[in-house]
Image 1 (cartoon, rainbow over the protein chains, first blue to last red):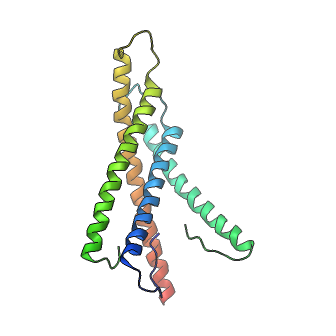
Image 2: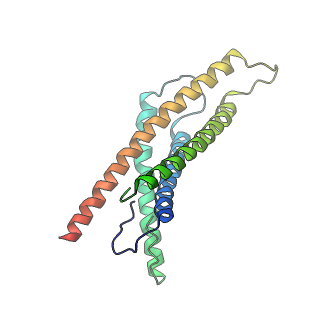
Image 3: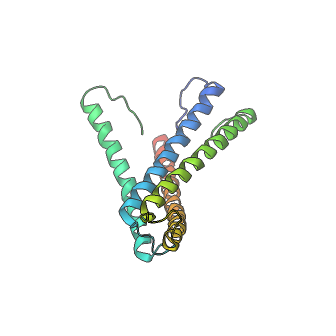
Length: 93
Length: 94
């Protein structure tokens, strides 16, 4: 997800910092959404025990893998759609 | 974090710290809401019942555990993505 600096004019300090910050923010948001989503899908709300059991653990791993796949898939599809409608704006998610 | 000067790095670190504090408070609030919703349902008294108290405690522990696990998966995924990107770059440059 890093921005490639090929053939770009020198970025000002503020721009560089803003770029890194923006990337960090995206990653943090994604991590939070991942947690919220997979918690809902995999961990029931009764909290009879403090530890994750094997089933929950495995579910979380698989949930994460699928979450990333869905993220990629939709990203690609959106890019495809926007290209098809003429003028790929290349939103590089 | 390519080509940042020392001053820029410092500025970035400061901002990240601020952001992390905000982030922490956000997570904390969500946790309170979530564990409350999941555990508290006995309003025959003002004080937390033993069951409710235990539930909240387990809720927090479980949440931390799942948060950590998912965070590991996420980092693995990112590392993989970076590797793939680099490989792509290299094959393009050939």
